Image 1 (cartoon, rainbow, N blue to C red):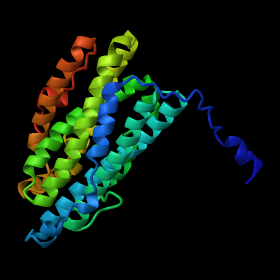
Image 2 (tube, helix red, strand yellow):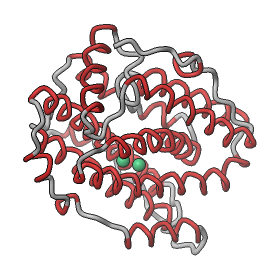
Image 3 (cartoon, rainbow, N blue to C red):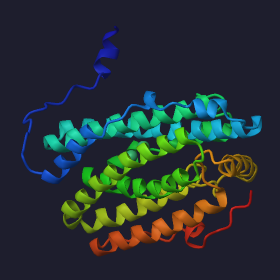
Length: 304
Ligand SMILES: [Fe+2]
Ligand SMILES: [Fe+2]
């Protein structure tokens, strides 16, 4: 290796002190649950959807939908890896690190369960076919935005999104008409419920300590991420450019109409709006204000 390249390598920070504190009994309970409730995506038998009489265009729409789910779950793995690095080198307690490790493993199995559904429906897409998705997905998570917040404030923002996506996932679980898709949704949902519980513990413990500036930032970051990326085809299609909104929206509608564990574009904004009201109620006592999000607050109709 050239000496100039060696100089650019990031030195590994000193890990000491390595804390094994016994605090965070409530986080530890979640860690133990995670061990007991581990599951294996390979055990889900998708023969039902492989054999089902599903029209080709519906299979294609379903495969695109579950590929998108897989790409998004994959994004959570990278996010988790960054958090684990932070947790190790800022000497956070053992239980917090254990939870982040569980989080990564769980998001990885959500990713796997999702690409397996896509595969069984007609083929997983490793790269989005739409140009728009190719360019937007890598920008969903911005580490610079994350680093602008304290570790726990960042985790709290993530939890608010887990809460939102949990509501959407619940609707997708209810939509799933095939046993194997239903089971995948149910198992993913069970893990997500634990991620949300962790976030609630963090909120209870650390929100009171956040500075006024951090609280303001938290509300702003939440709104920005929702508007700028998650309403761009992930949670909903409302903010996609016209032609892509129609194309992606039609495919989602098709997948939902055939019970492939998807949400109809018209239904999504209502679910997000209800979840957003709940989230605002949850964070208000801590002095966190989530700015208005017109697409959601005005329940802007999604024309597909
Ligand atoms: Fe997930
Ligand atoms: Fe999650």
